[in-house]
Image 1: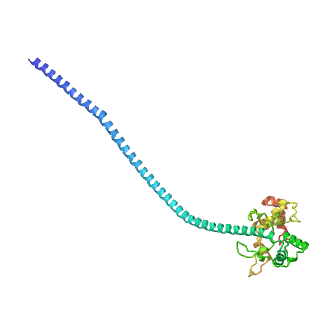
Image 2 (image 1 turned 90 degrees about the horizontal axis):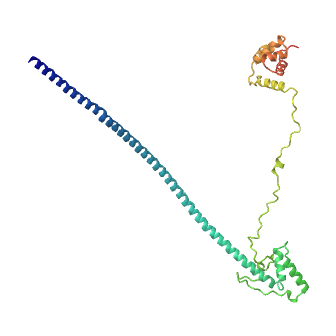
Length: 317
């Protein structure tokens, strides 16, 4: 009896352990599935959606900025086009007025040319007809108007009159009226001898221009500067000359003072005006050093040293 209860107790305990283990395994697998299978993709999806929304927001902002810039550019272009149209409108009005004025001037010039051609043709028609009976009148009218001009047509008419010696040369010629302006042909303005030209020649086409003189003029010949006769000679020792010139430039030049100072001794004045290089050259010279040694010691030219020593004021005779 006791053994049966003991076995039943162990069997029930084993079943309870098995059931508990299964229950725990079930919950463990469920938690694992929920944690790994469902929540992680949802979090990734939410993150991707947030990134997508932020990208869309940035894109919209960029589009807005581009639209604003485009609108400003369009407004600027419209203003430029408006200003150009206003300026061109004013220019068009000026061009139209100038065109009308030019047309009027051209019409007047054409009318004047036509009238001049008609008068010229009329004169060409009238001059041969009146050459026999109007020679004296033409010569008398031409003398006060044209003193130094002799036309071949007038000379030929005079010679014909002298050879023919017509008795009616002194009789007054028959007056003929000009149909264009109503003046008589015996008027001096209509019977003056003029140069014969071809009827089809245009006065504007026969114009050859103005003569401004010879164009063979060379400006370079007049403004050429003569070369100097005396060219500077090159010194024998260029380096010594350069060194001496540099020394002269470095020397202190005395300035004119309106209030001259009180004169002092020669030694003090020399001490004031002497540069350090001159002082050292004087010291080396007094010590008995030669010019090449002084130049080598101080790094100056020999000519410069000689010049400084020659310009020394306190040198002994």
